[in-house]
Amino acid sequence: MLRALYDTSTNFLNVHEWAYGATEVIHIACMALGIGLIALLDLRLLGANIGGVTPERLVRATLLGSIVGLVLAITTGMMIFSTDPLRYVHHPTMQFKIVVLSAALVFNFTIHNLIAKRAQPAGAAYLVAGISLLLWVTVVFSGLFYAFT
Ligand code: HEM
Image (spheres, rainbow, N blue to C red):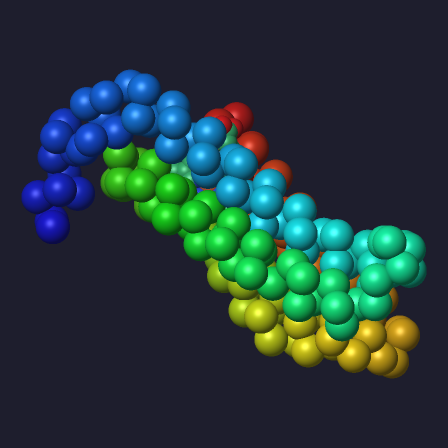
């Protein structure tokens, strides 16, 4: 395990360039699936009319897709991370992304989904949707800006 942290030359993604590229593509596609479904629900909570569906039904309809998307995004993220763990672990933008991601996950599967199911009171639903969008947009932008920092 410790050896793998220092010697990444045998890591499958480092040996096969196509595998690295494919993992990045899956990372981005799954992130789009998971966060896209959460954002859809947030827009509904903010008052958008999405096919006349109630927030409660939308929570049920999007839950599985958002879990699958997030689990695969996190798994592929960890795979990319393993290609150079010592560089990533010390990078402030990566550290920031992991902290905000953890906060977004806890918030999403607790307060967010609870309030979304009831969509009551309306003020709370607005606030929760705003916080949720802010957290997820921050995760995506810290992933994007990693390369420039
Ligand atoms: C839903 C959660 C996540 C989102 C929204 C997300 C978002 C992103 C984005 C937008 C990129 C930039 C892709 C590109 O420019 O090609 C990226 C790259 C990356 N992500 Fe994630 N990510 C998530 C989870 C994770 C996790 C859990 C890890 C690791 C523990 C991780 C590790 C990485 C790594 C190592 C890169 C490549 C950075 C580089 O060298 O440029 N990600 N992520």
